[in-house]
Image (cartoon, rainbow, N blue to C red):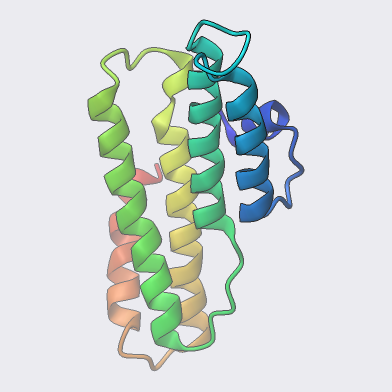
Length: 148
């Protein structure tokens, strides 16, 4: 599953908001929950939950923020980096069938880490004298292992 598939499943546009996701999730949950609908199987409801998680993660990592200071940029880049790696290992530990195409966590990880790298590069170019530049450069070097 990827973001585009989840957007299609939820019937949302690429510029959806947290409120759009919440509203649509409630509609789909009400429609497909096995205890409150004509559907007695939990399969579709579990699909709703999977797609919701993908869309929530997409919002977290791709909601534009006005980052003005060197520290704000550094802090956001570090947060994305740490959260992405943590989520990657959590998902891998929950899924024992790592050959399934539905569980291609490396693609999601690389996408998120690329955003983190972009922010580190932005920090270096916009604030070359910042105290965070050395760590940003070290982080880019470390990310290169994941982004091969």
